[in-house]
Amino acid sequence: MTIQKFEVPDWIRSVLICDPTDIWGNVVGMGLAELAAVICPAKRFDRRGNLILWDNFEFGLARWDVTEGGTLAEVSLSTTIITSGGYSVKLTAGSDGLQYARIRHRHLHPVAGRVGVEISFTLHTNTSKMRFWLQFFDGINQQAYAIQYDAVANTLSYKTTAGAWTTFVADLDLPYLDTLFHTLKFVVDIENQKYVRCLFNRNEYDLLTYVPHITTDTTLESMMIAIEHISKAGTNPHSYVDDLILTQNEPA
Image (tube, rainbow, N blue to C red):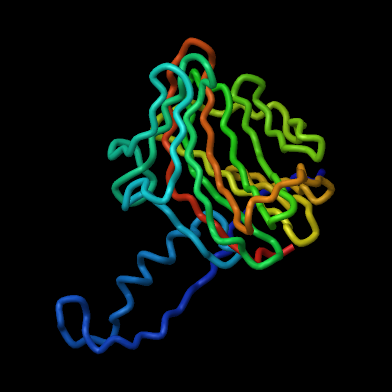
């Protein structure tokens, strides 16, 4: 596995302005500037790939399935801790039973190729694990890709072809602050059925030798994104999640 420092190129975007007026009806030479200002910051962490979904939860949780596992588990919107806009999702994990809080979104199956998902999240002192899933269904099989941060063991792991968790980064001790968001992005190749890379904060990890967990599944053609926050037993920690970004046409 190759580890390298991750640097964002200083790209410049241009917009062809076509609106004769601004949002107040004043004749200007910029009309789409407001829209450009909103769109461009979405990919401030990793600008590779074409954006097909960006959710900063400004419009609530209507597109998400919510699962609350265990005593006092809760999924809710928060205006207290955010990365952008006015809202984030607060995942309070249960203290027993499944010990988690989870959100899932089913999306149209993208064009076969390389797909990426990016998530920003916080950690709590009683967080046990954070799991991030990409699952692809074609009516015959399911390709399950997942990355797990284990806050107890301080490791990053991936879901293997056997369905187990295998560590690819060790000694990854992160600070636990409500106001500090960590950002993770991982890219997979659904056409060739393999992981591609994982970006976590300032580092990038090569995952090209890893393959996903593939099982028989007759679920009709679609994909699923899921985020899980898991507690240490007997506690109810929370994690704030914001700025979920889905991309396609990722480079190799």
